[in-house]
Image (tube, rainbow, N blue to C red):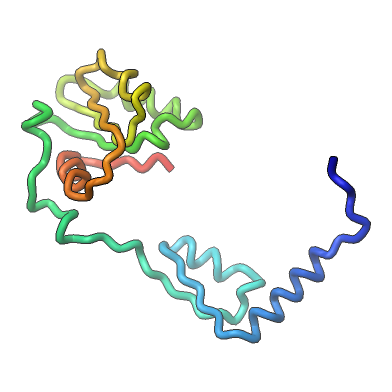
Length: 155
């Protein structure tokens, strides 16, 4: 049971935060232009220093100069779409996923990475879909990325 508050202190707390943040040398770092620009609009962060630093990629591993899995998966010459299971199996994306599957034919292939056992078993009958479990090895993940023509981020 929730006890109702007799006093709403949210405005007071908001104003206090604004004043406290102005008294310190506050640096805000966003990992994208959108996040950084959105943070700049916050009245609480007024006077802060804003920086944008993209998430880093180890290009000694994640590059196009190494092995891929096309031959091993027997998908040479196919257009390969890569997605991650955590968003692929999200109910919100069902319509998009069905659309992508209907797009697949003998010239296209879908790879889904990060599947649990039941997810892996959903597509065993479809020869145009390959599922992988969780991949923790960066070199193996780089091979999978190199295999794909396109990565679709379902977020």
